[in-house]
Image 1 (tube, one colour):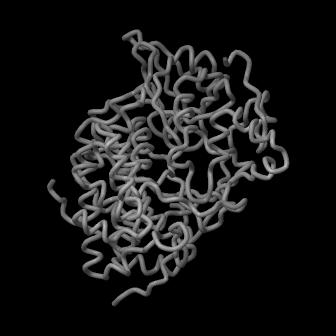
Image 2 (tube, one colour):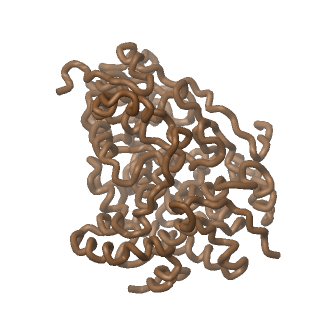
Image 3 (tube, one colour):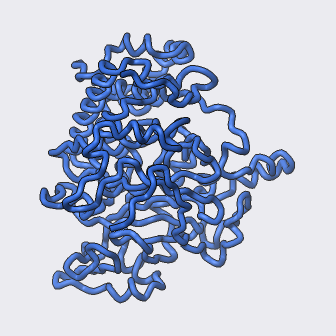
Length: 490
């Protein structure tokens, strides 16, 4: 058994990053001009409030947008997603960003060299995505670079493939002609298959469609903390076997008795002939998640999730047996001040809506210290059981009874029939090449789980009081968080 890590312990992410292609090692510096490579030419759910209750709870800045919002909605008939993004709750601005708030300081070059702004427009989309990362978000709400990057993930020529080290299941690092990289998770189950009832959470399959759906759900929730993910149909022969220099991977390719191309790679779980990944005959679905900046350029910290499961067949974690466990967490840095605990609650809600029990660690960018959002990485173990709601995932929320006001109001909004979380996520995913990404029962499960989240918050408010439970992040300058200094009511 691994020795227990201290609750507030963080470690630098020390996984060796995949080296960029030799031709573009000079492209790893920020800022840069990366030349184009050659050849690249109304029933209200329980736990929610009425619309007028939400309106009264909204700050003056939000109410001031109401008239413009009503006019704009008429322009988006038929698109609930477009109407949602025009809602005042989805139009809050960030505080003014300083060099300390952005991952890479490129503005200085623009100030001293006017041509630098023009050169920035010529950067590949993966680099423009990296440059846009700040302490509050991985990407802005209406950033056209994200749509362009999603298209690149699907259309860019794959120039090399290698197995990713570490982890329990097979994942591939794919490099594109524009020198961008992405993590490929192959299809292991059909969309209709559920996790077998006798499987433990730590031996569940990772699903490519769960990665895609997590990106869209995170975006609809307005977190924007999941790196862009797109589905792609890959030719296993031309786009994996023929371009890999990884001999261990290449040796695992074979032709099945049904004349399909198959391979299995090397990993801890499910990497054998019996669990081979087979195409039809050589076409294989998979998810491609855009890489974050190289660790040599932007170090990340890995933190132990306080509500980490035991990863043991018989033992329980401390939080599973101690109902007051959150009180210990709130006295431990970095959860004793600032916004970290509220960020964990946001992550908890996202995990519960997806049915993801596998969240043992999380990461943040080292540059931003403790006052930054959590990066929502590695989302393949969600959407495994649409017929079951794993309430234990919500324990951080039910024990701590804390939530951002902006998160609470958005959840209430998404529970309304005129928006409806499942419809919005389905509309967002409809543009993906592998649509339909989720079957309807998984979409219905999201709506059902959303009601359970709101019920939990209603119980917290009844027990602890609204002012303790709901942290008002909508007041003050641009709605910045205040932290959580209110004492616990006994």
